[in-house]
Amino acid sequence: MKHFMPRNGCPNCWSEDLEWVDASGRGTVHTFSIVHRAPLPEFAADAPYVVAMVDLEEGPRMYTNIVGEAALDVAIGDKVQVRFQDRGEGTVVPQFTRVRG
Amino acid sequence: MATSTSLRNKVAIVGVGESDIGKVPNQTGLGLNVQAARRAIVDAGLKPSDIDGLLTAYSYVEPYQMLGSALCEYTGIRPRMAASMVVGGASPGVMLHHAATSIAMGLAETVLVCAGENRATGLGREGSIAMLTNQGHPQFERPFGGSIPAGYAMVARRYMHEFGITREQLAAVAVNTRAHALLKPNAQMKTPLTIEDVLASKPIADPLRMLDCCIISDAAGAFIVTSAERAQDLKHKPAYLLGIGEMHTHEHIMCAPSFTHFGAAESGRMAFEMAGVGPKDMDLAQLYDCFTIVPIIELEELGFVEQGAGGQFFLDGHARIGGKLPINTHGGMLSQAHAGAAGALLGIVESVRQLRGTEGARQVKDARLALVHNEGGILSSHCTMIFSNQKG
Image 1: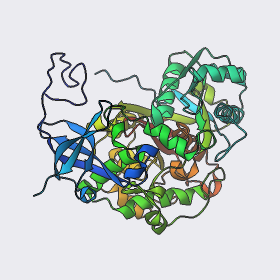
Image 2: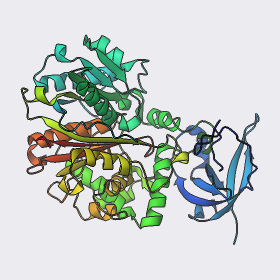
Image 3: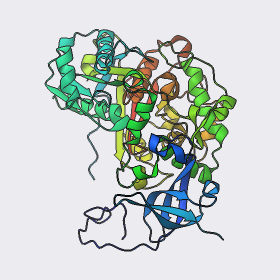
């Protein structure tokens, strides 16, 4: 059973016998919102931008952004692929782009 | 799992109070709480020395370490039971649950419950939005620029996708509560609203627009709970608690078990079971309405209508005073006031007044049974309450 966010035990069976699993980076958009009114000044220049819940191929769900070409045309059910945004000082943020076809 | 001991008919709300509402720059948040509490004690015909239990929620504007104790200090009330409970918008219901249990077990006889903040004056719009945004998970939510509206917008988007809820149906929720706020003297929003106004308001987090979002207020509310025996000797017709239930599933929307099924169904089931009544028996309902999608979901989860039918219920006018089930008869958090846990508490205050039959133009005719649903986080924690002016 896979879970996300990371915890020190499984929220389903309470096992502490856990291991990290690499995800494929492929997923499906479960839902999304286009944010027009950035809640904090540091995001204001990006608006409008897409926040989304992406269901990973492996099962768990992530809070993320949809970015890249035609991101604002995103729809529920779209297939997406991860890409990582480097924000400096060791911070890397997983975001997703829409996959054609 | 053992079922909880029934609290049916054990306690009643005997006094209610609201602070001044809107922008109240001459009061601190603590002061607003005390203003509401004083009005509730006077309303009950009691003295401050009659209060032997005190429960309050939280304040982000004035983050006292022990808000309950701070209120004791401010008022001079010396209760033998006090606490501050932090369950977001579900706090008022959860506090009532704890007050009722405490009274039933003899920990206290008469409990003051109050909540509120001066968010409009103390934080303002930018400050309030930033503060709420920082409630997201620091590592797995906040880096993406989401907000509380965006979280609820994602719920709305999925709900619209699965059940065909429309933008007009969402807007009808805001129009409904505004019509009621116009009849409520102590309400912040006083201009009439149309569906077109809501649809033309500026986009915040698609599909939610500004008028789909709750307001930001200075506000506090308070109520007094006591045993059913004692309630009979007091000033007003008591509002007996017939049933109450809670369900808690997550804090962060990312970890919600579902985007279309929430804890309200289970908290409602427990409350109805304790009360021995069902949705069809209710004369009115105050449903948590931080965003227009939320009362639609609650109406469905609580069993008033089939899943997917909640939006049309509002659009058809059934939630209006005089309709099949009047909802948020005081204007709710979309139009009366919203300041932390005060928003949900003011729905309890309104229900008690409706059950007394004192509300004039806003009065629901022959109101005997009222349901209140509180919700905290992003549909994370739920509490459903059922009140009546007669023992059940």
